[in-house]
Image: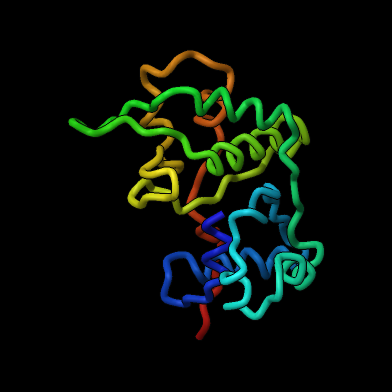
Length: 180
């Protein structure tokens, strides 16, 4: 969700800001589709929206009608989240502390897995800037970009290998436009 928030904050000096803008422009033009978990509606605060000139999340979506496709996390997806959040992930760094997988992160990841495996969106990519350097409301959590480094020694389950196989990348546009 940090990707939407990065767009809404309009900080042109922020990493990936222009790439995110280009992805959104491409989606508006019908060149790609941006899928998101509806949990995003709980993560984006009114201050993020008003700072960008939007009254609420519905106004934001209306401005980009057709560019974004919401995916509601079904009860089965939420159950999958419970499974992947039921243990500590061993820190791959020497003397590092084990971490948990954050609730929102789990929902975003498993919604993306659902979109790929159940909705047939085979070319889906999970865009995130989460490299584990920052804390959220749940503390320091497992990094999403390098999730595969955190899975050694966790209990066997059917979902962790699916997350490891999911393309997870920063939102770097593959063909950036350059303003001259």
